[in-house]
Length: 186
Image (cartoon, rainbow, N blue to C red):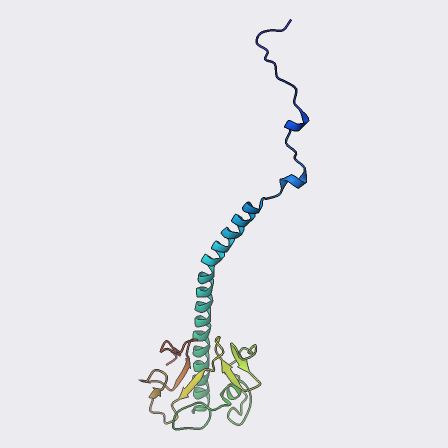
């Protein structure tokens, strides 16, 4: 005899059990497209932030480079009592300035190393021994002006102002506007 509290449930048929084979557990095309769209949106939001951080890092590197190069020229002047190279009207540093500050030659007979430049990769961010020039992180050569008449005044042609110092090292900072990075070594 069956009790009234027991309910009858029909037996489960094989067709009513969900098929959990690996073939049917994959993502649908719509789900994949939604995930790809979300990743693309996040990448699009992150890209400007990464670019900004890289730009700031390049400016910091250029600022460090111009200050180190200016300090090396000042150290040379303290050691030898003169600026490296010979005087010119426009005050531009000699083409062999980096060689003078890094090794023994007629300008640096004691062979004192005043400056240890990074080696450039191509023509970016360092000293290129192929052409003897020192490049900023954007691949533009650093501009070095020296006060060969020793009046402690240099007319900076890049910013069109007079600076009261014996050496100015300038990087245009990757732009053609007036936002130059100028050495602050006095």
